[in-house]
Image (tube, rainbow, N blue to C red; front, side, top):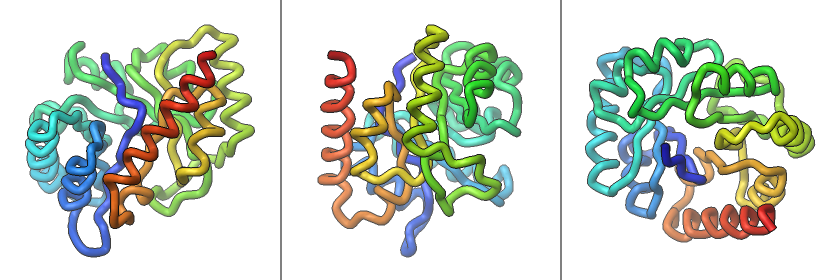
Length: 216
C-alpha cells in the first residue's frame, strides 16, 4: 500500500467549501487528500466524497474519507481514516476489502500497538500541538513526545508508516521528521495559503531532505 508523506486534511476556507480547498491543493501538486467533514449527515458527506473522489482521480491523487468506511466504498475513494472512537479497523476492513487503505489515529504507544494489531495501513499520530480544527483533542505530544514514542516504535520493530498531525507549521517539519516519523499531515497550513504551489513544494522539500538525513 503506497502512503504519501504529505497529507492534506480538508477544511473549508473563509470563502468556499471543502471542495474549493481540495481542488486548490490538488492544482498545487497535492497527492493525498483526506476529506474530513464533521457535523453533517451521511448524505451530505457522500455527495462531497463522490465529488472529491472525482477531483482526486482527475489529478492522479488519492482520497481518504474520514470516519465513514461505507461512504468511502460508495465514492470509490482510496480508503478511510478512523479515529480512536470510530468503527474498529477489522470491521472497516470487512466493508472495504483488502485493497483499500485504512488509516487509524493514535495518541499513545498503546494506541500505536492497537493499530498495528488491527491491521492499519498507516497511523496518524498526534496532536503535535493544539489545533482548533478538532474537538475533544487528545493530549498534545510535542516534539519530545514524538521522540519518545518513535524510540518505542523502533525498539518494537514496528515498520508501519506514521504520520504526524496537529497544528504543524513549516518550521516544525525538519525536527519532526528527524524523530523517525514517516510523514506530515497539515490542514490550515495549506487551506489558508494564497500560494499553495510554492508551499507544497517547500513542504515536500523539507520532508525529503530530513528523511534522507534520518536514513544516513
